[in-house]
Amino acid sequence: MLLLLIHHKLFLLLLVTVFVSSCGTTTTKPPRLVTKLIHSDSIISPYRNPSVTISQHVRSDMKSSMARYEYLKSRTKLHSSSMDDVRGGLIPEAGAPAFLVNFSIGQPPVPQLAVMDTGSSLLWVQCLPCIHCFHNLNPIFDPYKSSTYDNLTCESPYCVLDPYRDNCDYERNCSYSYGYVDGTTTSGDLGKEELTFTISDEGTITIPDTVFGCGHENHVNYNILPISGVLGLGDNRKLSLVSHLGSKFSYCIGNISDPRYEYNQLIIGDGAKIEGYSTPMEVFDGQYYLTLEGISVGEKRLEINQMTFKRDPSGGGGLIIDSGTTYIHLVRDGFDPLDTEVQNLIGGLLQRVDDRTNQERLCFKGSVNRDLIGFPVVTFHFADGADLELDVEAMFKQEGNVFCMGVVPTSFPEPSMIGIRAQQYYNVAYDLIAKKVYFQRIDCELLED
Ligand SMILES: *[C@@H]1O[C@H](CO)[C@@H](O)[C@H](O)[C@H]1NC(C)=O
Ligand SMILES: *[C@@H]1O[C@H](CO)[C@@H](O)[C@H](O)[C@H]1NC(C)=O
Ligand SMILES: *[C@@H]1O[C@H](CO)[C@@H](O)[C@H](O)[C@H]1NC(C)=O
Ligand SMILES: *[C@@H]1O[C@H](CO)[C@@H](O)[C@H](O)[C@H]1NC(C)=O
Image (cartoon, rainbow, N blue to C red; front, side, top):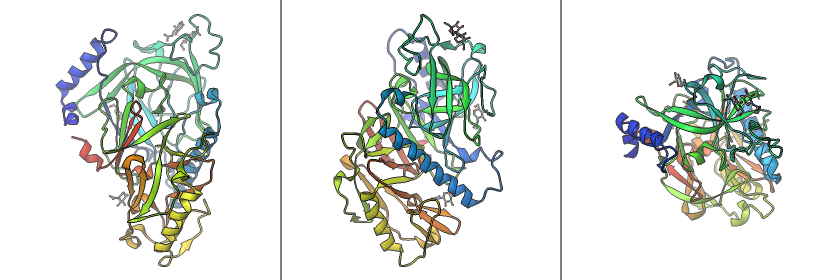
């Protein structure tokens, strides 16, 4: 119902006006930001090498999931808080689905395409003058040509990423430096700008005074996606757009195998779709941890000790939910019973094949659509009764004439992870104040109006 209202131009204008005009006087509700998530495959086609075969595509998909996983793993072992600040999530490699957000920055507005990432907190875009900028489609943002740009000094409370923060001379610019495990780095000045999002065919919404990284030196390891930055949805109170807008967000991802699926969306702020069953969430080292209590295959609850997915006091183990990881990664004590059950169900019927990217990934010759008709739903049970139900499409991935289980093993003290495949056909909401994550199984199309 509220979503319906947002499409009404008048209501929108009213909302924006109220917010902008009352800025700096009384507190008002932040604006509601509903934006389309663009499937990366829907726009990389002009850049994509058409000769890349399906197995190459699959391999980079797997590699990407593993790389991000390796990174998050190393990160959870790091307990130096200074390191945490300069490390974020990861931009997926070619083949892994990424979800992009289209918005404009500055006045006059300059369009940007940024990767959504729950694993990092900073919003940054490439900025002129470039010490080094990578190729992107849109013109690069020039802060000097924007009437709304404001840079932050090192004395600003938002200046938390400055490597030289301890030597803050009066009015020195706030610099930042941020790195991602795939080798992507960005550094420049932290500034404040106006962001403009298109929220429906009729309207836009403007968010003033957003802290962002104006990146003058940016490197990406690969440049498949025509992106110009990263939109971090992590929980850094000082930095993130999420905390600027009310500490809530939700996203709905439909069929990730379908680049043309139009209804993937992200909502930041009070308009977030906080619906469905909730489960407690804990932020540790900037990651969102959940309590996984068990797994069922059909009606059968697997024998898994409740402690299996618990994070221990030293920070090892636990289970992270993440938008940038592709697959599910489970510690052995959780993986093995699931692996065994799946083998029991289909091992006698189909031929198992070796997977070169990961020896332990369960792969069979055959077709998900033809050979897995009637395969039971796999349910991940989270604390307080929230379930994530995986149908065959979420559990298995067709790779040519072979299909593989989208779950891979790991060992303690590495964390387990719930990646984006498992979140298909769900609206997933994060309430950073109540410290809850909500799951609602839904066709994202139904959220539109
Ligand atoms: C992003 O938004 C701009 C302005 O609304 C539009 O011209 C452009 O086509 C959009 N880009 C994509 C990839 O959707
Ligand atoms: C940023 O701040 C510095 C120092 O306060 C100032 O000299 C400079 O002009 C500012 N840059 C922009 C683009 O406003
Ligand atoms: C601050 O940043 C602006 C814009 O990047 C730059 O022109 C200016 O020289 C910087 N000021 C200082 C004091 O470093
Ligand atoms: C998801 O998209 C793929 C590729 O377009 C398609 O083959 C599959 O049938 C879709 N699944 C559903 C449930 O619509």
